[in-house]
Amino acid sequence: MFLDFLDELRSAGIPASLREHLVLLGALEQEVIGRTPEEFYYLARATYVKDEGLLDRFDQVFAKVFRGVATSFAETRADIPADWLKAIAERYLTDEDKVKIEALGSWEEIMATLKQRLAEQEGRHQGGSKWIGTGGTSPFGNGGYNPEGVRIGGEGQHNRAIKVWDQREFKNLDNSRELGTRNIKVALRRLRRFAREGAADELDIDGTIDGTARQGWLDVRMRPERRNAVKLLLFLDVGGSMDPFVRLVEELFSAATAEFKKLEFFYFHNCPYEGVWKDNRRRFTKRTPTWDVLHTYGHDYKCVFVGDAAMSPYEIIHPGGSVEHMNEEAGAVWLQRLTTTYPAAVWLNPTPREQWDYSQSAGIVRQIMADRMYPLTLAGLDEAMRELTRKR
Image (cartoon, rainbow, N blue to C red):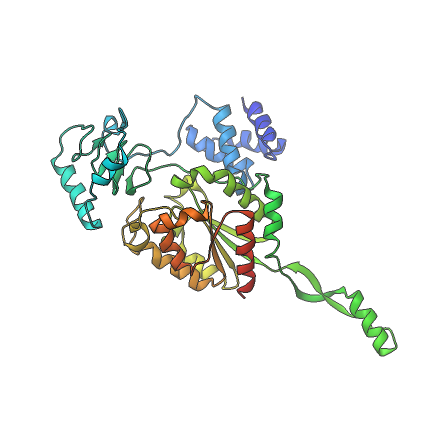
């Protein structure tokens, strides 16, 4: 099985060598880990994967080879009866029905009402307009419709939830995805400004010829080595409404990784808050404080956010508005801090530009970004790179 695992890794483009394979076997023989699928997964990943961009491919190969041995490593769910979370049927509503359903009101009223429902409800409920259940018009539950509520378990259908009571697993993006990446690379190259840095250790032929002609004797001139001086911070929205755009964002990620030597990337969900992360499997246990990002990377970094900006307005403007945790400060506060620290900043949106006016949250983000939001198309990338080039 282990040799098959090695072959599958190589077939997937992960450069796994026989030496690394022997290291893994030696570690198992010495019993450096406990005999659990989870510990074996992390040992194998640490042994074979040297590039974060290959983590998702490793996960796919691991699942293929060891399917049936383990199906989940760190999946947790909210402490709610499982049968409550199973949607029996989706209730289809006409546009007129949806207009008649009124939102509860403010954030405080919604959360207070949810607390009251949890205290009063005694059993499973389906198809109603008040209790926590499935397939109805209540603001709490899943599988139904309400213009503003809290989704508890299940899959999102209308993108109207202001909070989600369910821990979801997101995948890391693959930075080797080849597109269309060639065209994206061409667009990104507009940002690449070569600068002369370092010691004068390269012969300046043009300067030498010019100096010799002017002086009348050999005038050897040197210059610093030519290198790409652009530094890029890439913040990638993952999960939820971004799932349909995974391939497109992977292509952008792949192109950016190839084009910029000084590239740092972080993930966020919907809106940046007090923490970002590099590994979606450990986004709840191994986060990088956003303050650390602000204090580690200088003002000369160019900053690019990639996301559809589709969320509840509460997630941007209200403390505690995040769908996944209780944030002490509003997302707008962190977004403003990032754009203040990195004046050369743009937001790339994979949804068509003509749809932005129908999204209140997209309008808020555009305002915070001083209208520096561009569609994730070749033309939009070209506009964004021109904007970043103007910001010095």
